[in-house]
Length: 230
Image 1 (tube, rainbow, N blue to C red):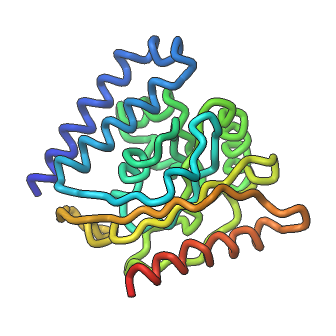
Image 2 (image 1 turned 180 degrees about the horizontal axis):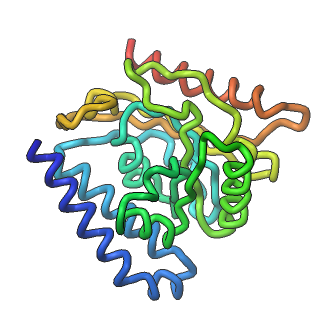
């Protein structure tokens, strides 16, 4: 419970800081926000005793932007990606998070995108906004749509992959062990080690449908997760 309170304090500090430095963020061509997000993520993980081993950093080009596609085991997945992937990353997040006072406004200012999963038309418009912003930042998406209850990779939905039809590069990422740090629906945070596997970038095939792409990415990430867990 103490760690949960500590997270609240740390996130609160960085949210307030984000408002203070916003003018500098704009002057930095919106790169400062990514640095702050990465630093906040690192502090959160260290404060909770979470260690990570990252494999595949050579597959990332810092000058490129990507649609980062990962499996979803825990809310710890977001700081794990933020701390360990050296990109100017934002998140495609459910719209409910943007209703949290102050926190939601900070997300909006720093180009996090709200996705209305119950309204397809609004969701598509949000994704179109994300596509325009990918000129200067990468976006993280969890195609499962919800956290895994048992650590196994669930079915990937193709909705957010509409961005790939515009030619954006996809960076597949497998998270192994995040569910042991913080289980879905729990507030008891455990210290431990998480493994992160970054695959070579890919794109939607010339004659490949979004659903076929979703299945391909699911198979790639699931195979890695299952092999590491066995």
